[in-house]
Amino acid sequence: MAVDLVIESGALSTVHVLNGLARLRAPPPPPDVQISLALKEAPIANTGRYDSLCGDALEGVSHA
Image (cartoon, rainbow, N blue to C red; front, side, top):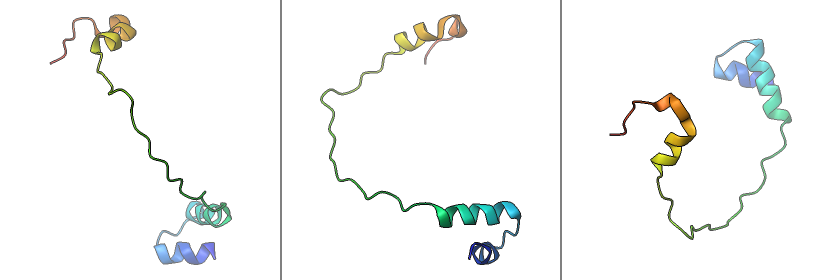
């Protein structure tokens, strides 16, 4: 079956056959979870904190 999939794709190689086998053996994906998430606070950009974490790597670089 994996060989058939590879032949249909037109990419004939052992790597593609092994990939097809792995996909056929893989367990089904978990069901979708319907959860609505909302932020309590909007994120705030803090370029100063980023610059402080980078240390001297950004010395002399200015943000436009």
